[in-house]
Amino acid sequence: MEKYMGHRLSKIYTKTGDDGSTGLGDGSRVAKDSLRVEAYGTVDELNSCMGLLRAELADDHAMQPLLSRIQHELFDLGGELCIPNFILIKEESITRLEQAIDSINENLPPLKDFILPAGGKAASTAHLARSVCRRAERRVFSLSQEETISMLGLQYLNRLSDYLFVAARVLAREHGGSEVLWQRS
Image 1 (cartoon, rainbow, N blue to C red):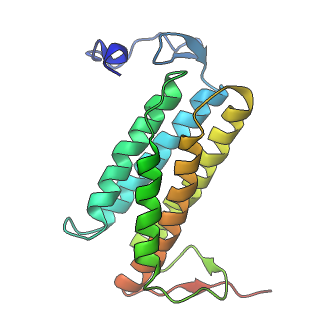
Image 2: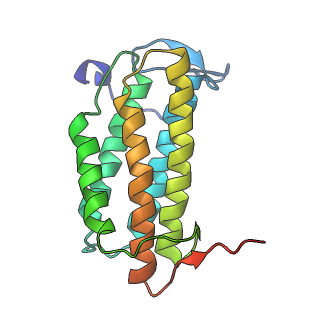
């Protein structure tokens, strides 16, 4: 990663993207609407949603350490997607999410109906992050159909969306909200 981070931005605007192209981490240039840029851009958007979720929780909330770690891993995933043939996401990150899902899900009642993205501000923010995570997963999958990428990033996003769903259920209960069940029309 160091060789790709050889210089820091001292000037925020460079004007090099005024023609609709952007630079990848390896120095190559692609269109700003390329599948690769869409994929890492959506991961970046997801990371912003994770920041919103963290802002909704107290600093000492039990989820904060994992949410912080997830933000760093999402930044790693963005870097991985920005640098062709580069791998940063590891199997351990996926395992950690699975363990977190199992841990918090065991105390939740089984779902018998679909729930709507609601249940209080923190829960709703987790649902927003979950839906952006699913879009990121779709963008990364589209990229994987055109270019060779590590499938661990795709698996990570799949587990993360599951974690965010379960976290939303927990947060709805913690913050005085309740899950809003879908009512068939």
